[in-house]
Amino acid sequence: MDIGTLRENLSGCIEANKDEIIDIGETIYRTPETGFKEFKTAAFVMEKLDAWGIPYASIEEYPGIKVTVDTGRDGPGLAVVGELDAIICREHPDSDKETGAVHACGHNAQIAAMMGALKGLLDAGAFEHLSGKLHFIAVPAEEYIEIAYRMELREKGVIRYLGGKPELLRRGFFDDVDLCISIHSSSNPNRKIAPGSTLNGCVVKNIKYVGKPSHAGSTPHLGINALYAANLGLSAINAIRETFREEEYIRVHPIITKGGDIVNVIPADVRIETFVRGKTLKDMLAASIRVDRALSGAAMAVGARVIIEDLPGYLPASYDSNLRDIAMDVGRTLAGDSDVSVDGHDTGSTDWGDLSSLMPVLETYIGGISGTGHGADYAIADPDVAYVLAAKYLACMAAELMSNGAEKAMDVLSKFTPLFDSRQAYFETADRLFRTRSLPVEEYEDEEMECLVESLDPR
Image (cartoon, rainbow, N blue to C red; front, side):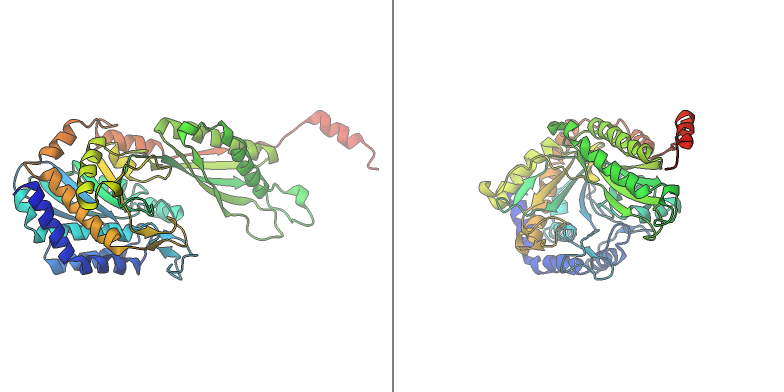
């Protein structure tokens, strides 16, 4: 079967399933769960696979699902990937009233598109015309949030890495995967399909300022105010922003997660979380050093201590240019020339960056969204685009790559140069980014000045 006919068959089968695909997306939307907690979402996906008679592998400790279809013909492994997790935005009208979770980033559309593509490929009999293995993987925890909870999982040995794709990489879910494709919802009104290009990476920091408690009204002079140290640290970060060059795309956006315990005690334990983002690994690590200097200088200014814990966030993402060229052709056949464009550099971060350091990957932005990503006005404005067109795109991309003996997939792989020579080298680099520094500041002493002060008349 020629690729044009196969595309038409796939689009027709997915169109026939559109109501079910939309229902998958809407059902997941109504049950938002944050990273490594997506058990209800995963259970729904597995129930749907069971109903379709499709076998799968899953993880018990946290959500993660993998379907593998082996065509029986030689070829690489292609993974179609969707993300299970939601974000937290309590201001969104559809957020969970207890957890604040809401699908204001479109991961519900990712899963619906992945599932729709799988069903379309099956119904069209497409696997008979493809080569290699095709995997459909539902991953947890793409959003890097609720760090304290994830660190608890790490301390218990449940996870090693705090992002879903690096963790599934560790668990072997990508051992037989050679290249990946996915979609991500987009609110750009001027396009329906836009293959991605590059994104920032990030270092994640947990910061603890340690002061000395004392009565805030009676004896503040006996305390050391960790909150003041933290405020100085935030100001110091702002003071160095102009030293970040535009081409580095540095982003630093701290929040105070604990400002003290009670109002009449000098705060002695103040916590901050921040990302330090940059376009390249070198840029983000250099910026991280400057941020550390600002934070430690603030501690010294008030006589506090600061403990800085670095965590490996996500590596900068570089989507494969050869996959992008194929995606542009597929996009034009589905949406026409005017609704297809290449996306520019994105200053957000994703765990696709980690996979892109090892294999060719491409995430393509699909329209149908209104409002602001991660915002209270985010909404699915056009389900036919956000869910159904997205499923058609993924199915047609899979067919394009894996037809004719997986000729195009093999060509992409032959032109790809990984950042790391091996997966072990990647893991070693990620592990090195786990580090903690305690910067004690000894009590300032100046005997000459103290003697002078004591000799002065109290009047």
